[in-house]
Length: 542
Ligand SMILES: Cc1cc2nc3c(=O)[nH]c(=O)nc-3n(C[C@H](O)[C@H](O)[C@H](O)COP(=O)(O)OP(=O)(O)OC[C@H]3O[C@@H](n4cnc5c(N)ncnc54)[C@H](O)[C@@H]3O)c2cc1C
Figure 1: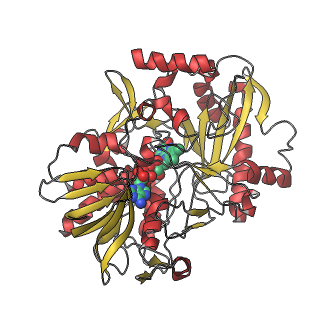
Figure 2 (figure 1 turned 30 degrees about the horizontal axis):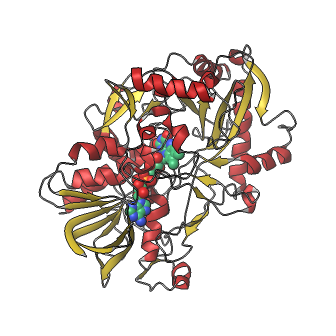
Figure 3 (figure 1 turned 180 degrees about the vertical axis):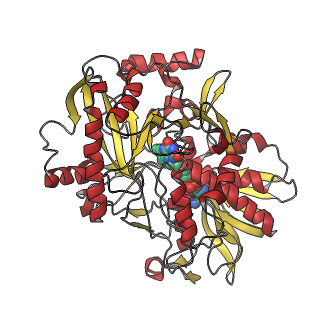
């Protein structure tokens, strides 16, 4: 089968839904959006607490990848959930809305990427946003498609104790992590919208795709996997994709192919198409089209460790932890749109310096009023009350890579994040962990703090070697892999600052993979901003 569109967008995730919307906005250009997963029909996608149902296991909405064992994390396989289906990872994420520090974007600009300083990208964050709540007004947008709501949770006593404890430990309070001052302790803003039937996740699909499905010039297909690009010399002419029944289709483009398949899949599609490092490609019998050493390299992610305590009083969210109470919370949400199921998993956090010699806040903390055997809820939540923080270093120096297992588009990638391979990351995470514990030792928690749960009392946290081994033994991904098709002009960059793939015409990558360096914060808002900006770049050029 063959067809032709002006643009094909590969992947309906955080960035892809924006691209489909904006490129079809003028009503003239024909756009085809292709997605490997299905539509976002699972009710747990839309229920804010549904996170704990979708993230723990591989399922129709979650690829549930695993990394390869590496000595830097004591040869463990680490779990990497990724969203599959409309909304991509924005349909399964924790809904925390953070843009990153102004410094992060100014660094991209200093590296030579014109148009990507904080001043340049701020208008795109604002264009996307429809902000509700108490924040620094001049930094927010109020009529974009992406609803963002500041947490106003009133029934989580220890959330406020956490913010108080941060200040007792000598850190500032900040009104708005996305405003004038990132550093400090506060409640999070979330991609959530209050609807007449209660709060709903506001994924990129909900914001950008659902409202425009009736556009005549926008087509979409689900449950189709894009295999590879079609070339005429070094010009991308289209793509080949396969549906669930194995039927292969060729789709040609008049204008451009846009890869928005995410930081794990966009580089794989390039490699399967013969673009990348020939050492990684030709061994699978794939012919080379263009040598680009950086495809799949430069992989960066946030690696976090959990610090938790048992609580001495039943004041935490474990009140809804038993099977029966979880069901009751779900029913209450469905009937009344309220209760524990109406809230996202994490309502507050912090950015601070892991040690006083740092110029910028380099640590992010996610605070939650519960403790669980594992960060991904794979082993459920215990009934014993507790509270936790996950700490990670915002701008890690360690770099990993991913590569193909085979030329088969259905094969999962081989993932080598190489966490903690740089000594600086180990030292910073060690300091960040000790600061986290110090925060929990503040008077605000005195009434509630029981025995340490994680790490338990047997670990001597004052011993560097013992603690470092524990960091390697227990840390997990915080789900922000980026930079595998990095933007730039050096030998390892894959796209230029217009997001065009170096050396190839008619092809751009538009998703989290283009970030030259990881930003200080969660990566959904930046992935959406990147697509808003890319759509403008494309329209300006056409
Ligand atoms: C569990 C979890 C929690 C997170 N929590 C937060 C949070 O609270 N806040 C935050 O800001 N960020 C969070 N993130 C990260 C954030 O959601 C991602 O960085 C962001 O969604 C990435 O956007 P993207 O467009 O690059 O990729 P994605 O949103 O992952 O989209 C890629 C899409 O491409 C599709 N695709 C892939 N390969 C193919 C192919 N061959 N053919 C067709 N389609 C394909 C995928 O199915 C997917 O739908 C979290 C992520 C996860 C997984």
